[in-house]
Image (cartoon, rainbow over all chains, first blue to last red; front, top):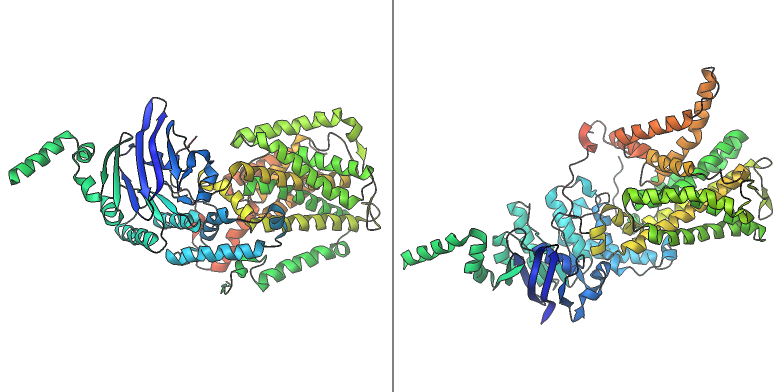
Length: 266
Length: 359
C-alpha cells in the first residue's frame, strides 16, 4: 500500500522547470531511492515534501492526507522526518540537545508549566530522554552525547542528523544524500543502519543518493531523474541498465558504445 | 577535574548537576543575602543597580542570546513596564501585584508587536526595533495623562507586606527586592532552557530550516521569545524607574537599549552568567571612569563613558566573541586540564556549508 504519493507535480523557479510533471509513490515499508545527475531536482522533491516549496501543479498526499494543506512545521507531526544535504544541525547545542529538539513534536506541556517546571514537565523530560537514549544506543552515539556539534567531525555530524530525524519517531524518513562525504567504513555503517531502520523500526525510507553501491544494496526501488522529469523506475539493477539513464550520465555515445560492446560479444 | 558518573536521567534534568555545583551557588546566594551587613549603603545601592540591569539583561539575553533575534527596542518595553506598574499602583493595586501584572502586560504587548516585527530578519529587525525605542520617547510625551509627559513621575511609596521599600530609609529592602526579582527571572530562564521551549529557541537561532523540519513553529516560537523577553525587560524597567526615584521620557531613551545589548555581548551571549557579568561591567564602569578622571585631576569629560563602552565592545567582538563568561569557561577548562590544555582547543572550526536559503 502506498504511503507517500506525488501526482503530476511541477515546480518552476522563474524560467527553470526544476520538477516537471513527476509522479511517484512510495509503499509502506520499502526503501525508495531518487537518483540522477546534479541539478536533476532530487532535493527539490524533498523540499516540496517538507513543504519548504509549494508545487505549481499536482498533489502530494501522505497516508491519504493532503500534504499541501500543511505548513512546513506541521509536516513532522504527520510522521515525516528528514535530513539535509549540507547538514543543518543546531551548532551551538550538544548532541543530546539536538536530539531532544527532535522530540519537539511530542511536546505536551504548556508555556506556564515549562516556565515553572511544574506538572508533567519533569515526567515529559524523562520520557523524551528515554526515547532519545534509544536512538543514541541504536546509532552508537554514546561518546558524543554531551559534545557540542561545532567540534564534531563531519561523519559524526551526519549520524547525529540521522539520529535527530529518528528521534521524532517518524513513519517516513527522508534522507538527503546520507552517504555523501562519508568514508568507506562509515558508508558501510550507514548501509546497515538503513537496513535496520526499515526492518526493526518499520520506517519507510525515501532517499537521494549518488553512491550506486549503497543504493543497489539497500533499496527496493529506484527512480532516476534528469532535468526534473522521470527517466526510469524499477529495481536498482533495472534502472542502472536503462539506456536513458546511461545516456543522462554518460552521454549518447556511451549507449552506442555499450551497444557495440554487446554486439561484439554476440 | 570532576567526573560525573550518571545513574539517572534526572541528573541532567535537575537545576544543579551535583552537590558541589549546588553548594557553590548556595554559597553565592548566602553571600548575596548577607551583603547588607558587609558593605555600606552606597555600594549596596550599586549592587541593587547591577541586579536591576541583570534582570533587564536576562530579558534581552533570552531573545538575542537564546533565540538569535537582535532587538534594539527594549528600552521601550522597560518604559512600558515602569509606567504600567506606576499606573496600576495608582489604581490601588499593592506593589507586588502591580509589578508582576505589569510584567505580564508588557510581555503580552511585546508579543503582539512582535508578530509583524519578527517577519524581519537580522539587521532589519534591529532597525525596526530601534525605531520603536525612538518612538517610545514621543509616545511618553503624548500620553502625558498616564506618563506625566516631560515632567515625569515621582516614584510612589512601595510597601511589601507592611515593609516600606525606600532607597534612602531602607536600602537593604530595595536590595532584597532587586535580588528577589533577579532570582525569580533567573529561575524562569533556567526552567525554559531545560524544557522543550528553550530548546526550540536555540533551534530557531541555529537553523530555522531544520527547526521547521523538526516541527518547531518558527513564528510562534519567536513571538513567545519576544513576549517573554519583553516581560523580563518590563520588570527590569519598573525596578529601574522606581529605583531612580523620578523618571520621565528621558529615563528610558534608546541609549538604554544599546547599553543593554552591549552588556549582554560583553557578558557572553547565550549564558545566564553573561547577563550578570555584563551588568557588573555596565554598572561599575561609569564609577571607575569618574574615579580615574578625578585621579588624573581633570573634570568629567563628556562622551567619555560612551566612547569607552564602544571600545570595549569592539575589543570583545574582535578578541572574545564569547564574552566574559566565555573567557572564564576557557580559563576554567585550562585549569581543569592543566597541564594538558592545548592552545588551539577553542579555535573555531571551519563551518560547513549551510543549505541554500530556501526563500
